[in-house]
Image 1 (tube, rainbow, N blue to C red):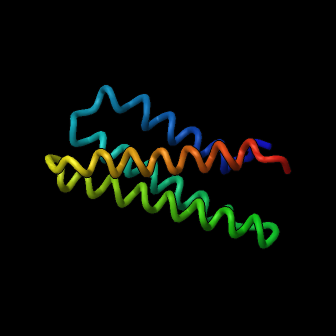
Image 2: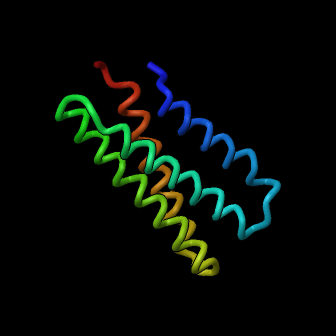
Length: 106
């Protein structure tokens, strides 16, 4: 079921993704960081329901914060070759998390 919170996250991701080609190299980090902040606050205020649902959202919140930290770390140390790998790894972790949660039987 698509709720207002899910729509907000999707809109923030779409805005960050579509604006990235038009931004300078440094501002794409800002767009990604803003997306992670929007997603963090949205998921934080989305914590409700059963204990299992609460725990799943908290674990997802941890991956979101890891993504924010990875984006900020990459913005600070742009020329360090580990930072893009770290950010890509966190994005893949978050993506596989979303795929598994969205395709699991209820």
